[in-house]
Image 1 (cartoon, rainbow, N blue to C red):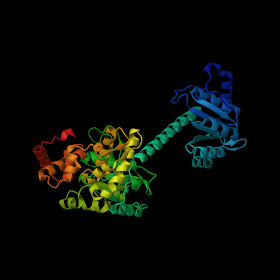
Image 2 (image 1 turned 135 degrees about the horizontal axis):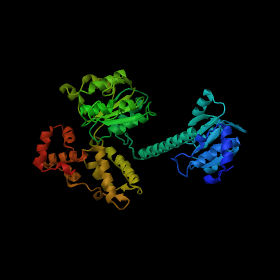
Image 3 (image 1 turned 120 degrees about the horizontal axis):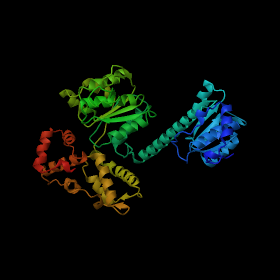
Image 4 (image 1 turned 180 degrees about the vertical axis):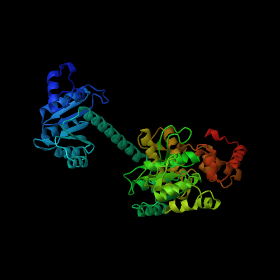
Length: 487
């Protein structure tokens, strides 16, 4: 039976409605009109063989602006579900031709994302548990409180929206995510063998590699293929974080614990309980915060800033750095005990220049991702473009390669990118970069420009990569007439 979508309130027959609601245990306060957060396109399927329930609940939900379809049996509900694809289905447990669980199984087999609420006149804990196991969002006992039902419907719609948003986001990310083991070089094969060997492990992972070499890509791959893949993955870049900010981001803080702390904040360790925390550039983590990270890893407990309460967080740590942490330990800028704790499994990612046979397959993959992101048909790289890419030194590694290809797609009208279409800047010219007659000063100037460009002109980060004091780098910039703010 199909109930038509909208009936003006003045035609609802209030006398009979009130009689039915009183008979079912609904008070007048339950059936009043409430603010609607759904739209007229929200479709609900109500399945119950009790005419009074269908009348009262159906009328109430139509008043909230919903389109309501009603059925009295599993067979009728199945047909309506196939025809109308409701946003939420509301099932009675006892139906003439079977149980609501049979109907729940049926609709979930057709649409694994189908949202359902189960109603019953004799609720038990076992029934409630079973309904949730089968995929129901909520379990309600009769007599129904209409306001409670409406709140549950709204929550179900919101949960469904968030699920669909997450699925869409995951699909988008999967299209733009790079395979960390793309290529044919021996070093990539060894990395893949190591990754597969530790897939079932909860042990900490330490990733070493130059800036832009794909440390974050490998970290996410390890999480998504590991034993905690169903839990949260949170990441934090430690570069440039002050002590207070790093501690607040990692462990959270209580309101009033410092100037500007206007509300409580949940830290990443707490958010990622049972999941994975990825600390990128852990070599830049403030020395005074390092022992707190060590304690959180060893004891699985921590305190928010300004709080005395111990909180528990069981996380897997994946950390990464481009720095020589061994040198930092000897210099006293990184704790030896923390290094021992985080490097149970160590991956060393090579610079792109050390795996030249992988440049072309990586470039081809990045190009297709750039095309997909821009909504344009797939493009190809010409043979001369491949040769040019293979000759270049790539100081910015995969990140720089991605940027070059994204730029090339913007300036190429056809479906093939030539060497000229790559549009290397004059200081990124691969031909100049391979000229052994070039002066040492010019090579130094080009290298500084390359590093600054890959770090968007951030002098401190560039100095870290170049392993020189900031003051020395500023002197070089002045010498060569380079303005870091232009990047």
